[in-house]
Each structure stands twice: as structure tokens, then as C-alpha cells.
Image (spheres, rainbow, N blue to C red):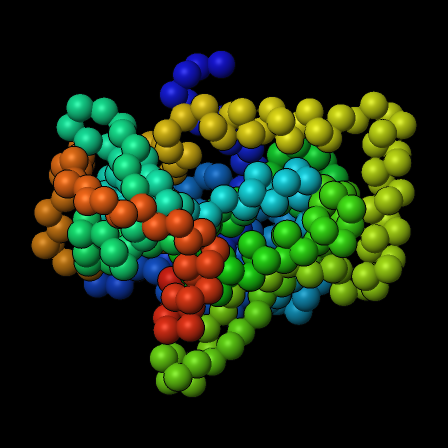
Length: 313
């Protein structure tokens, strides 16, 4: 395995709840009230739809509000990774990634580790460039059990809800998260900050045609069948963790275009970040490390902020 290269779950396509539109010659994100499933191929008009998109859209009357899924791993943090990420707004490269306790940061000499005070307490995070960033990998259909579709989000509601659901489902299923027949569901809410305008976020639930008891029974049956056939889920989880820990940053050059379009559209000509930017080594003071977990920080932050990013809100 090449050292320094993060090995991520194989990607077959993308899931989003927003779209990119062209206005006055600029490609800008626009909020949406439905899922879109795309391939990994992009044309001048945008990302090409995946065949799953057409089938689900017809079955649901034109708008996809739910997607039947399974998960690849039993460990929640392998299916869904959420971190504070400071992006280069021009290149889409991650410059600093942290969890509220420690971070990995590109400096002029190397990638180094520092305490992470979270965006509210970090001088380098001014201007909103550092934000919680989550990536969820799910399996759609039965064609490829080791191939996934990725949902990227910087929305507090989606991140907090997905993190909680995955840990809850792992607990009630007896560590059979990968065997549960589940559903990705779009939910809406209005807040004072949104002035009554609906904002949309992503949730994971049991499938609409199954009760929780039927869901758990299916998971036990699938787990038994996999063990009988020799399917080693523990080994798969271990291999995935080794791959994800093999590099400093999960997102690479191939992901930068999607990150820029979805989260950092250039709306004027005042961007000043250089393509190969690095960050200075900050002066750290005693006690700078914050021992509050990322999920706990998000729960507190979400009470004040509910403005979601369109493609992952």
C-alpha cells in the first residue's frame, strides 16, 4: 500500500440534495427539495444522472425523497466521516483537518499535528473557510456490495442526525450495522434563522415498508448467511480503517472540483488564496486543546446555526 495515500471506499456515484446552475456566466449551487443520484462523469451541463436516479424518480412521482440503502461497514465512523476542514477555496484542497481535539495541517515544510480549538476558537478559520464536513458512503442496489455512492455535506443538521442514527442502529442491531436494510430519507424543517423557509437535511431510517422488528430480523438472517458463506465483516472493517488512516487527508485532487462547486462557488473575482497554499505554523498556548468531541460541538453549534449549504444541508 502506498504510504501517504488515503484508501477510501470505491465510489460508483454521487448523492446530493442540491444542484449547480449557471447564472450570469457563473456556476453556483442552488437548494433543492429532492435527492439527485449521479454518475462520476461530468459534462458541460453538469453531472450525468446514474441509472438508479431515473428508476427511483419514476417510482416516487418525479422527486426522489428516499433511497433504499445498505451500509458497507459495522463501524459508524467508517461509513460516515465528519471533521472540521479548512479548504483552499480555489483548489478545493484541504489545508487543515481536525476533530475538535487535534488537527493535521499543511505547513510550509510538512503536514504537522496541532491542537484543534474548532472553527470558533481558531484564528486560521476566519471567514467561514473552515466548516464541519461529512462524507457518507452507502450501497445502493445489489450489483456491487463493495461499491458505494457518496453523499458530501457541510450541513449541521445532516451531520448531527447521521452520526446519531448510525450509532443508534449499531447499538440496537447488536453490531450488525452492515446487515440492516435502511433508507436514506430527506427531511425538511423551518427555523427562525431561515425565516420560515424550509431547509432540507438527510436522515437514515428503517425502510418505509418494514417495521423495526422486521428490520432487525432481516439483519440477523443476513449476518448468519454471511458467516455461513465465509464473509468476514470484521476483516473488511479492519481493512477499511487501515486504508482511511494511510494518508493525512481523505479528499484528493480528483475530489477538488466537486468540493469547489458544491461548497465554495466563486461569486466574484476577489479570491486571493493561492492554488498551492499552505498555512503558517501557529503559536500555541497552554491549554489550547479542546477535549470536546466534534459531535458534541455540532450539537451546541446547531442550536444557533441552521443555515444549510445547498448540496449537503
